[in-house]
Amino acid sequence: MGNAPQIKKTVTLTDNETGKTYEFPIVDGSEGPRVIDIRKLYAETGMFTYDPGFTSTASCESGLTYIDGDQGILLHRGYSIKDLAEKSDFLEVCHLLLNGELPNPAQKKEFNHLVTMHTMVHEQMQFFFRGFRRDSHPMAVMVGCVGALSAFYHDSLNIDDPKQREIAAFRLIAKVPTIAAMVYKYSIGQPFMYPRNDLSYAENFLYMTFGVPSEPYKINPILARAMDRIFILHADHEQNASTSTVRLAGSSRANPFACIASGIASLWGPAHGGANEAVLAMLNQIGDKSRIPEFIARSKDKNDSFRLMGFGHRVYKNYDPRAQIMRDTCYEVLKELNIKDPLLELAMELEKIALSDPYFIEKKLYPNVDFYSGIILKAMGFPTNMFTVLFAVARTVGWISQWNEMIQESSQKIGRPRQLYTGPVNREFIPMDKRK
Image 1 (cartoon, rainbow, N blue to C red):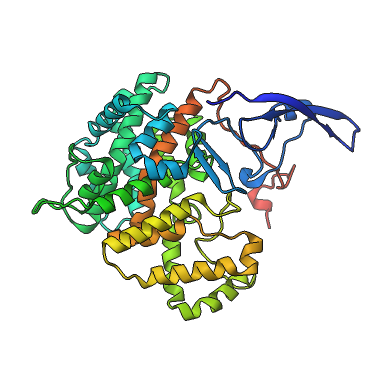
Image 2: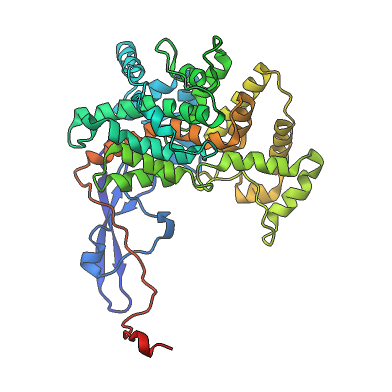
């Protein structure tokens, strides 16, 4: 789990009402802000903390991902996201997140083989799809199908068995893209495409998504590399809403397939996984570069409901380190496909104006990873309702790595947030015949 936290100092809290003082340890991680250990706060003071959204609360220890939002830093197991996106592939990043180290050649070959051997789903899964309407939202089908994996693979549900946890991890990383491709095929009425063992992870996903039985599917290496890079950039992102959901579900000792399904459900929320789709909608709403000043002015107006999507981030108060990589990838894809996308030109102009505007500079509203990813996926042929599904495919390795880390924590216990109760107290029950 990385370096063990070190207790360096204590902080003293004083209750002004009673005059009592309490001391709590200050814990240092290997990076990031110091943490006040308040696990004994209620026992010693009879009080809770109040932190809506848990924005100032560390809910766990983790050695997977480190983010410094002020500096625009994102590290996986100590490696920068830029190095990983430019110098490795997605399965190498999967190995890193799951096992803590980049694989050597022999380990990489074995890891790739194990993922490849698990890409097929149980044949009965195809009948499961028939229960969904064809116009169902793909994320609704993803939640159902991934959760249903626990009904097909009973031999990897014992979370106390390290071997079964490992098998479950491989199955999820391998089968979620297969399910995602099946979701797309089902929605457009085309036959499911079985995975091919001779293709890479990204190539196989594109083949299952866009290939048809009636003719050979030609692999485009530029698009495959772009898809692989998109997966890398979304593989993990610390304790976000969906990851926290997976950990909370896992804390009840739910099986891994159910936990990942809960993460997919959380990701479905438009405030989390649907941001790139919202960027496209915003660009279409603006329509023309001449209207950018109008919409920038509207975004500054607190009384206007319009929001500039794709700028700013809950964590990053600097340029999202993934955004530059995504922008370069966007150029590569559009050049390869020979697409002159007016939305890209609009996005470039919007970025240029926003980054030179004192308001956005002061508010530190920089472009984030979602600003460009929607344009790339649209160019590659994905409908907008599949964007969040692709996010789920990429994030599955982060979720299962976080879940596996949590299961092994000696301090792990069921999640049970507390509340600040503001409702009525001690109300007298009034019989029905006496209520007015």
